[in-house]
Length: 115
Image (tube, rainbow, N blue to C red; front, side, top):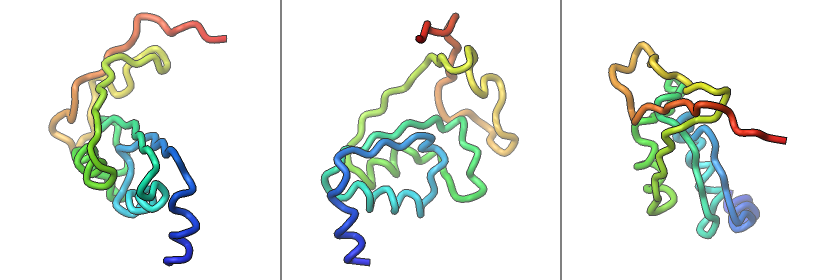
C-alpha cells in the first residue's frame, strides 16, 4: 500500500465531491487518500436527500466528517434550487427520519435560460 499511496497522493490539485451526503466511511478514507496533504477539497451535498444510510452514509455528520478529514471548512447553504424547477424532496422526508437536517430549499420561480 505505501507504494500505491505514493503514486496517488500529490497527483491531484483539486477534488470535487458531489452528493457528499451519501459518502460512507470507506469512501471518506479513499477521498482522503486521493486528496493527500495538498489538494483543495470541495464537497456538495444535502443532508435531507441522503438515500444511502443503509450502506453507512451519515448525513447528520457531513460537516464534522469533512472538517475532521480535510481541515477547516466553510459551509455555504443554498436556499434556492434551479433543478427541474422544483425543490427536491420538499414536503417529504424519509420515513425513518423524524426531523429535517437543514433549512428547506425553495424553488426558483423559473429556470434560468441556458444555451
